[in-house]
Length: 263
Image (cartoon, rainbow, N blue to C red):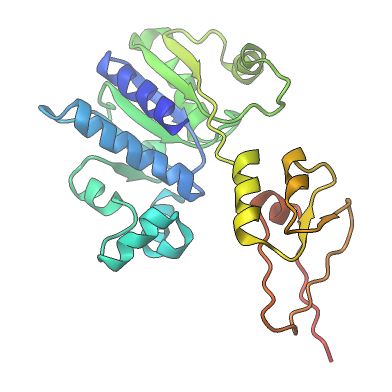
């Protein structure tokens, strides 16, 4: 959960360890994690200046900016702030107060980097990007400072054991020296219960599901189920009034959209 990730990061810096959190800045849930860590640091270090929280990404600043201006795309609680009026995220305030540093590359970080610090950097694969470069630097024995590598990406294969996943992911960086890996998978995809509740609330005319849908969705009586086989075509007639289609993320990612102009 987000709470487990935040707790692990704050406990580490409170114990004198810097934290490297490989991540991807795209998506409101990921941005919410940044805000949650900043808030937890303020509470834990209320009597002193909190450790540096840095976001390293060439697109990080744009993501923060768009997240604050497109309130309709975030969760309901954040979207309601726009009517108060408030920004859905507190990134502007965090940056102006010096509690969040957003830079485009590792070269733009303070040198030397304050210790302890929390650095969020792409990419979760640890095969490219600033996170891999920073891990190579931090694992060097001459550095002599303890650090926590906080891995939050979901397991690529559900049947893969966590220790096997860590071994494969960190093989190019062995030995890790003073870096301690910690696996806290953060899977923010829609779960079975949420999907069932959503369909019950929406009461769609037809529910189009992948070839192997969640079992509980078969119980949704308000929505006849249609299977969408690989390479199948789903036609949505735009000319019909009062017709709307909602496509969930995983299905949308695997769908090639085409707009056919009618005569």
